[in-house]
Image 1 (spheres, helix red, strand yellow):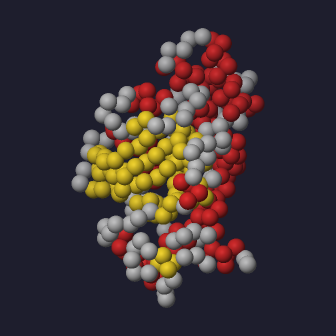
Image 2: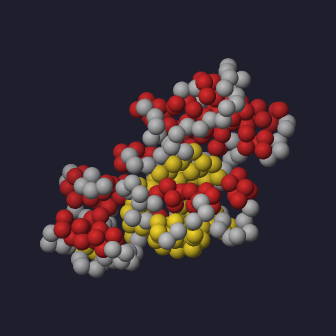
Image 3: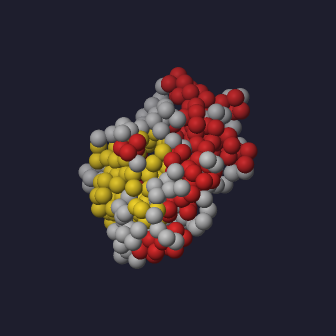
Amino acid sequence: MSTQREIEKIPQTRNSVNEITSPQQPGEERQNRLEMIAQGHEFDSVIHDSVKREECVLEIKNFNLWYGEKQALFNVNMPVPKGQVTALVGPSGCGKSTLLRCVNRMNDLIDTVRIQGDIVLNGDSICDAGVDVIELRKRMGMVFQKPNPFPMSIFENVVYPLRIDGERNRGVLEGVCEHSLKGAAIWDEVKDRLHESGLSLSGGQQQRLCIARAIASEPEVLLLDEPCSALDPIATSKIEDLIRELRGEYSILIVTHNMQQASRISDYTAFMYLGRLVEFGPTVDIFTNPKLTETNAYVTGRFG
């Protein structure tokens, strides 16, 4: 049986949003479900059993978020497997980046944001009012859509997390710099120019420099918000190769709009729609044998 036929031979829905069976008109049924989500009906996420069996680095529990009166995330329950690459996919505005930024509490910077629920990092709640946000952010690395090296040398860019933590031993800093640049697959390109500005690098090199800076403090989670969206195909390929190499050593949560990229680099994929987690499972299953017609429609380009 061909892959395409396998993709199309998936469970479909009856009239209930939360039940799975075979409709008479799949396309029409899919539209009904999307309309129900848009109208605010409750929607139970489908999380594959294989996800639940994984050891988790993050647990997102009954998580809701509002921007003022507008709700952006709805009752998200999502375990993030440890040492794996988890991709968040979905149409623009579905809450992917919002959810990612909740993990290191960047949304705290927005006055109108209100949350409900919890996010647990290796057993520690990160949403409690008493949490030291600065210390929390030391436990995770963040890489944004556009490369954002600091206006300082390549060396100082990489060791910046250690500098602000009080590290002054030159030997330690040099060791971390080399280790991080090698980990980010850019050491051979910059080892003879560490004194030069990070801004002198190409866009792809700058993004790998930012990844080196993010892993310098050995974070528990590496958060990547569309890290290739501003890069050309060659630079994108290098970043994807790097993500694959970092798998296992780091737990990576990545937002991407690129379905092919998600299928290439991730172990698990979570499909979000209008602030809701729709389906979450192994990437191979999400792309070839998802449990929901909505997921199939999105990953095959029928909507979104």
